Length: 202
Image (cartoon, rainbow, N blue to C red):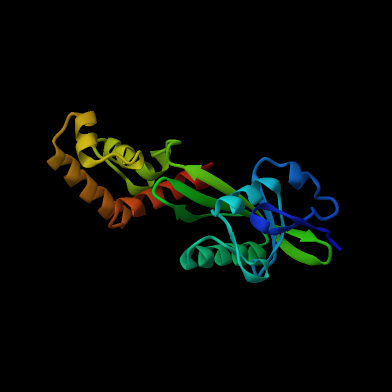
């Protein structure tokens, strides 16, 4: 039986299962969870995200990603991982305007039960998102590409216009075209898709 330790923010964090002691030394945020999102183990990096309130542990040690939609996406990721028995990646949640949580899930067996090893990536928009995958996926023109790059750096249309040496009217026309090609209605929606494409390509 695993020994419980008091983790960050008063969350009980079990010691690593036999053969998985390396998880505690891993610099990335790792959680061992069940099919029903119950946290069996969280390493020190993951407990740091819990302490900051970026990862939430609810009643019964159930993992939540803040919003109901993000938690639903997490459940779908875990289900797809266990059904396909293969590594899965997904963009799960935005934290404020400039931070994202993304996750990689890998099926694993610990003891008699099947679990998912979840690696949570804390991504900040101050690390520039590579626009190339989105440019290719959306079929953007040479004129639209720098507009997308500006949007991914959270620049306003005026700032993009000043940087590109074109009018704000032209920038807004390009933005409408990019939104149509990406099938989104907001810059946040565009960033979500472009970031997801960039993350999956890694």
